[in-house]
Image (cartoon, rainbow, N blue to C red; front, side, top):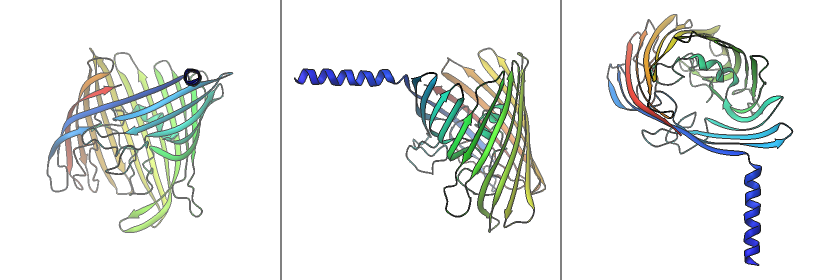
Length: 360
């Protein structure tokens, strides 16, 4: 009797496993040694173990089940990790936190109609168009157009991710694709945290173009004054692959309209980048201009990088970057792990990182 029960349990377990088409454990670990000068307004330098210089460190689980008739169900749970200190304060998770699936936590249905997702995810107005940043939105060279220019705002007001979101992505129609998302504010009063956005893209051979638009309801404090209103963003990105080199470009405008400060605060950002294969690696060069019209100030950002692939999963890399602030501009290079901040208004900052990235 006991053997029969065990056999039935094994058959039931195997049936469940067969119904699930696939479940995958995946991740990336990226760590480096970094040095930054003028890491603060006092002009101090900092050296240490940095992270995410070539890709964002993460661990995740994803799976797809074939439901028949061309319909599939899927899930995706992805958490950021900080390998320099071993915590999970990444992807929107708070400081000193444990593992939280803040990078992505979605369930979806997929078929000939496209894909419908529910949960926390990259905003559709960011996911596609951000790919034109030749530094992949990581490290000292990352394009900073999506930073939250005004203040703390909502947890997702940088425009990268959105919680409580319903999104839809179309199939590919001869190179044309699109995506739409709506993030619920889930409040009985006010709209702070609400998101609406999307993109339209065209990919055909060497040419790729994407237009993205979004609106976020935001609130926060600017110069000790509370504000509440909205942030509108428009981004146009494109690339052309010449085989020998690939050319990339980004043009972006962020505009805030809110109670608490007069008029509108506008911030424009532009980037031109080039990548070129060199042996088993790739050279990257990118220039970005941050035109902070609300401050009547500008910053110039230049970065050079090289990635050398040791295998399909492991690479070594180096990035050298410099940001020049003019007038009231006070931007730092960003990048993680070494505690570098803003250098102070009208001051410059330079950084160098050399690291290793492994994916699994």
